[in-house]
Image (cartoon, rainbow, N blue to C red; front, top):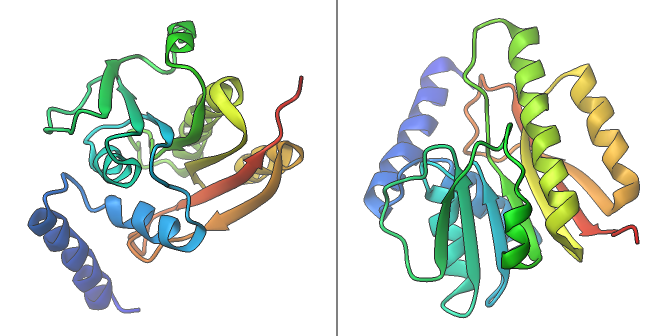
Length: 200
């Protein structure tokens, strides 16, 4: 794919997001993964970590419907308008104890589209991405239902590979994904853990 082709793809998804009322083009990454793996269903309970600017939360809310629940957490929650089945919470996911989530109960799906503020130094950016993924996993391990799914974004690295391998015993299947809406030069991939195995 040429640079011109990559820009054309980027522009396509950005325009489409604006036309369809989503704050960011990232929604089409989730949409593609969901279309293939059928992650989101009516009346599910979803935890969206690092939910700003809100595209994944909006998409999940539409899929779970009025009988479902989507809890979106972020240090700076989005100001987008959401339907009633969405609850937003302000949380520093790297620093806070989130035991108050117990009042929400467990979740069918935990999502994390979080990425660090990049520094332009590959090793630093990779390490910061991995830190966010480890934090997301701590929450998923605590609040995910047995048989539930965990989808997260990570910057590719050897340490990231080790982290992904360490998750394998906790899920029936682990899959690495690169949705079409991902920018061509991006170091990110998505990892889907299906059918969580809860340790009692």
